[in-house]
Image 1 (cartoon, one colour):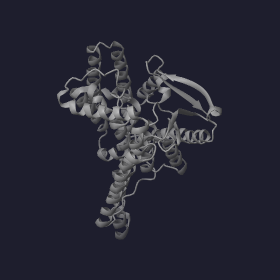
Image 2 (cartoon, helix red, strand yellow):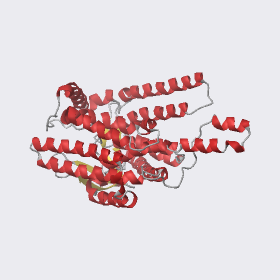
Image 3 (spheres, rainbow, N blue to C red):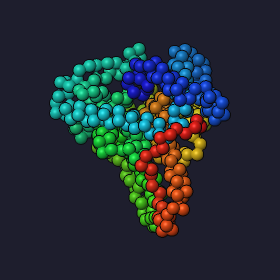
Image 4 (cartoon, helix red, strand yellow):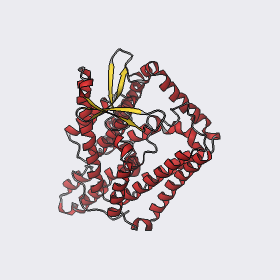
Length: 421
């Protein structure tokens, strides 16, 4: 499904797959759940509002596309509502996505190395057009072994950067979901060195500002989670670790601006129109938002008005923005008895990318899964502690003290599915 490139061409296949998953794991019993019905209401309300906007602006084709997006998002949530009822299934699904991204990341790294060696034309074997019916189509190049070449950027320093998308429609989308997979697999103890390498080099091969941003928000978030899980560390030590990770975050934000060739400072000179238009569009949209109740039709001369959620508030208006946050929060808070807000750390890169960097705020299934699955990475911590406390009668007092003061991530999540939430 979108935002993968194959999702642009095979969306009906993905919809059929979601329907099969929904019939297998959710069925009709979800409609007896009040939480399910409330979230469905928010999803439908958002897309209904968007549909009437496009009809009011006289754009019937966009209204039809909105109806399709509504169907896809409702189907995705219905399927995942039952499928993610088991933390074991969630872990397996995210691990499989991480494996795919690892392979694509390693492929991008190989293709990037060959391109830097002057073999770009040799390893290219196919061209295809994304959305050929659009006025501004995107031409992608398939390269050996199975990479998608995004384009060449001439850096301000004179370096030629060969950018790869990692299988997504935009180069900056791969880092967001690579960091999500890295966070999830690390927390669930299934992150291998090979997977870490693939996700990292694939992120670097995008040569995007979004890659720096995603790393800058994802790694400090995980570091803070790890710090607060250390029960035996003194308060002073925790404070020093927190300050260290906060300093890392500040350094990352500085690199977003000052990073050679891919930072905003250099891009503002090599890609002046893109950077200036995006910054001005976000500024104008946020300034106008309090008085922009119902939204404005996008300006066809400004292709940055839908580039990220903050820019899209110009089109969404205050009502549409509130509805988007309402349905997204409802989706994120779907699971009971899970540390939901700690799940924000797992999805930090995806949230940062959709807010300010990439047009994925309406890309339904994988964004929904990234939000719904995030809290499940912690779902078994309380169960693990309960098992430790329940078996403390069979330990010596000193053993019980050690176990009660140490919080460990389970090496393996329970394999039995939990009941439908």
